[in-house]
Length: 535
Image (tube, rainbow, N blue to C red; front, side, top):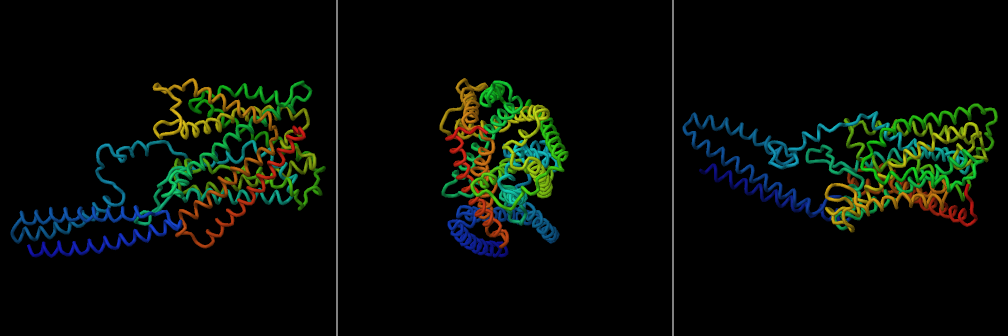
């Protein structure tokens, strides 16, 4: 009995000291959180203290059970076996406590999330090669057709910017994924966030818990809708330049293209569209090879003297937006990394995809510009001879029309989740009925979005200017500004000095490029609209 009383007294003292230590740690954590350099809050620190209190009660219950079993055993032999049982009980207690406090394994309660882990683990995962293929599709798409136009206004500095943008976008993609993880008590990295929006919300807690998510959603919607507009613009442009003798204007071709895109409003999923994605990508690579082959056939006439180190101060910021927009992939990187079989291979995948993109884009832009020099147009295929141009442009139009549903459906999903979701108390009622069918007014809104992309393409038919504006406005924000800012905010205490330097430098340079590119793109659009320039 004396041994039991002494054990209880020692445990009480130990528990009191632990509580005092945890509360002081919570105060320090809360102070650092209010300063903005730590994601932890007072509530988190008190939560650890409460967890320790529960842990103490758990240990006490185990000790009382062991003491009772010792008393029931009786005798010297019983005491001997009790000591052995006590040792074994402590091992089991340590093991049980480790599961109880840290990873929550062991028999889960009924209805808990742990019961669904088996089903989640059985979900199909993608390999690093498949993930790299998805990233390549995003950064090697149709918009590389505007890169020679960027070299026209930037010269060798434009080539350097293609390399620089690849390095920075690769780095910001990695640090964005790093923001999804936090260390547990054992120092192991644990994925605690799933999406770009989750990262943004974590940075704005506790004062504005949903502000960051709203900002990211707005940027995503703008970029996705502008991508749809660019597909309509490039479709009208390519068809008009493929058949210049026909009495059909570029705006009329855009209307024809949009008529073919109206069925997108009825999409429920992308299964039917995804079947063509591989064919579209292969066709695009074939088109790039054809363009480069034609340029190489004219290698004797290349105008090396036209590539200089000077820049067009007024139009080069537009080129920055074009180059940045061609590398945007950060929106879907969190979900892509979460679906990889081996997330540890994500960094390697990002390295080789961006190196390949940098080499291919640089060669394509330089070779195309050397071939046509000052005559380089916004869409480089417009420079091809009429005999080749029609075939190449028809393939490109097909790719543009088949690529349109992907950003359109993604934009619709973001809009529906943000404004038409009754479960999350959004502004408007659910646009789906009880049977899961889309309501009539919801279908009308989808059709209105398709028509909106058409109207923008008709009144602003300038591929390069729109691409530069989008890259400067949302591309720089999602690829440069927000990842570096989130990285500093969430992982400040763990960053080395060179990481801090890189993040701050990227934020400053990205901000300057975004502001200058936005201003000059808007000036270019206003000038083109004022003087009725269509090419």
